[in-house]
Image (cartoon, rainbow, N blue to C red; front, side, top):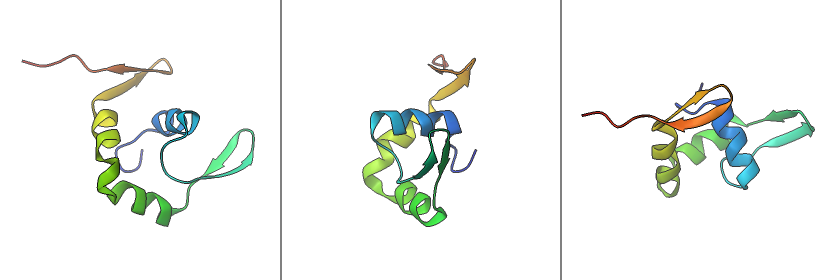
Length: 70
């Protein structure tokens, strides 16, 4: 997990048409450029997506919100 975002979250963003630019070599092979990732994660316009991703956890292939504490 790089930048605090799981591969599952990146896959969900790809399916929604959002997230960092990627290269798709085959139907099952996707790659990200380190430069594209760094630029995308440092762009303030993406902060809301990163905040949502940090509030989620992946379990059994599904993304679920963490229970609120306190």
